[in-house]
Image (cartoon, rainbow over all chains, first blue to last red; front, side, top):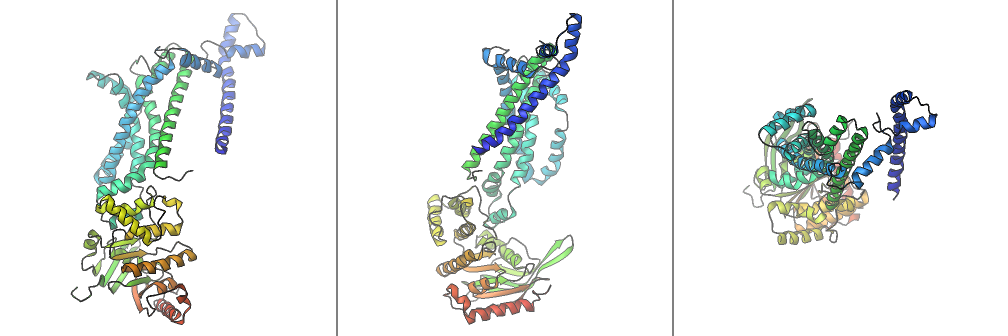
Length: 292
Length: 263
């Protein structure tokens, strides 16, 4: 359990540092408004009382960590998960389109990578477009995808999932191209001495060799998928989802709601990356990987 | 090849020139060579003498640019397509995601043998290289010498009559190497295969071979061919006999004549 302690202690110290800084900035950023309030109410407070008040405003510029924590706890555990104010419900809405988009994106990424590795023309013609596709800001593309798809009658989960697909296929393509090309010359020569066909070399050598690359890129892709799903909820006026919560919070200046939706998004992202990581480790173990 | 004992490998005026950024490099020039069935032939010389390239030409991993070569009376390409040889590389080159027995099974899967036949061949070759009991281990669980033995088992698995070995024991320590040399001779005696063996160790070449091809660099060429007078039965301490030392001296002279000791 030494590795646990080796990881836990440094990570916790950084977390504590961040929380302390967060409190300091919450006081600094909320102070002007609090001073304004006090002046209008003709009140004067001692320093400690003043700081206390900056950390308990209903619509603070920067909510204090404990305010976010309380809001997050209430909206996660105390509400029925069918309520549209429940973070669990909203996270589930976002998660479902994330997973669908991630599945599409991974499949698309693998197919493109296989094409690029096996067809020289695709390598030269497709790769520049794939890279260019990722330089277009997703915030500009997302509304268009949603509007265009709505015009042909596709609404709901699919348009959001497509934005996730758009963001997540790229890391998978890049990782898999690298992975499928990762076998050593010696291994390729070996297959050549057996007079192995291209498909035998592919299935018996290239595919197994690419598996670690696949899982590394899937970790990046699943996080990108989540971003895509959230971004997809912003321009649609979606009624539910983490993106919708962020938008509603911004409309009504509910800064605490925004922050707790952000925390919910981070928790979902961390869980997704963790699940992919565990799956990767299980597969590695099944493929005879040396225990770390 | 119409003779009574057809040559396994026959090369004449064989040459290979690599085109590099620094201009053409003559890796092989004017190589004439005939290897008969059941011979154990070593290729020895300093790095850059083309010994590995020659082996790769026999295996159809490189194409010669001049001259002719035949393997089992065919072009190297036809021979490779007929799976005429097993090839052992400098490193074991086992697939890390396969157990030892699945690694040995790899060529058998590729030529499409049934599971039962695979199991039978695996059992036989694992016994041949003394690795019985390690079938279910992954490569990283084995020592370097055992990994190389597994790769020899893999090369033997589909029962080709020709075994091409490219410095297979070069990366191993001397004690393991002695042991593997002994086992290789035993294996050769039992299977009656033709073996082409690339090495840069004079004692290894003399100990193993029926014939030693001395090569030298710039351009890569054959400078001497030495027939061994040692008996087929060779215990390790044969290496202290005057006969052994005389052959080793001849090999060293051959290398010196090819300017292999020049700076």
